[in-house]
Length: 397
Ligand SMILES: Cc1ncc(COP(=O)(O)O)c(C=O)c1O
Image 1 (cartoon, rainbow, N blue to C red):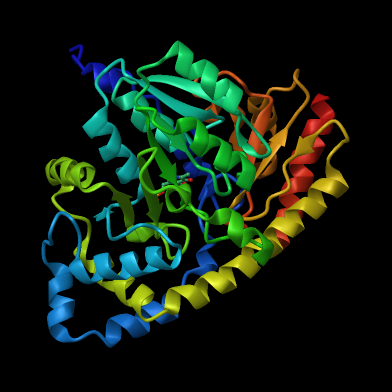
Image 2 (cartoon, rainbow, N blue to C red):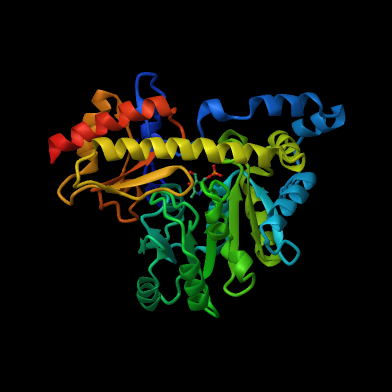
């Protein structure tokens, strides 16, 4: 029997990252593919202590359904966290979601009809393009440089698609490109967007993971700089600063928008896990999260530095990469004629994997680049994995 799948379903493409996860879990493979924290780094002891010390009524509440908007103590704790960043929590509302990907999903659901245009960075986080495609949006990618989205290109795009509804950005340690927006580019962008109808979705999953204190100032969200104009929906998550298995994120936006998000979430999953919300609330409100993040900054910087040293040592001069200043990724550019899928096919046989470039191309084409995640791989394995990849690239040059 031929199944009559929906247009939405037929517009979905399988995430190459998900497909590769099956290799990532093979014990003999060195994986630079998943954008995930290192398994040995999770704060298991702190969480044991938190759970064991919870009053019985709070433990029981954790097993129960909760409000769609979120577990109230967690909403308050996240608001305090966002206040510390200078975000306008008083004039906006906050909803707890099942991760930043769900925030992207419900924002798309409430604004996008099939055929509506969404502007993204080029390259763009594959999870977001997957969501946008599932709502049959028209995607248009705008190139970025080392300072952020290129305003002249954005202007061109808005001339071509004047009714574009959403501009989706990941300005702080971009996934996959690793860049951090400069202060000047953020200002230029905010000035450019003033009084325009398009809504910005500011995705800030990695902003707390800067390596050097000097960059902290650059991680100030744009919603902080200009809270009202343009309209910004601010999204972040516990995934990279506690654990993706918590499946918890949050969205801060104007009350009218959050009211619609609540409706959209109600028909999706009723509420996020109360159990993990209870735990995350204690982790955050007891201040344990801040000391944990401090430790993770040191750990991830160490992994990034190790990977860069290995790239310097093993890669041929034709290969270029972006030096990371935080987050999880190094974006590598190969000479035009080298296809990263061909590289991957070989490295997979020899024991190392990464994510090919076209996975992050909204048009599914540009493939002479790839993403290395250093976050999940212990430093002692990084050297071996990079040597494998570099040897294959030298062979294919
Ligand atoms: C830029 C970006 N946004 C959102 C997500 C999804 O995060 P979550 O686990 O909170 O859904 C990721 C995960 O890799 C990401 O890199």
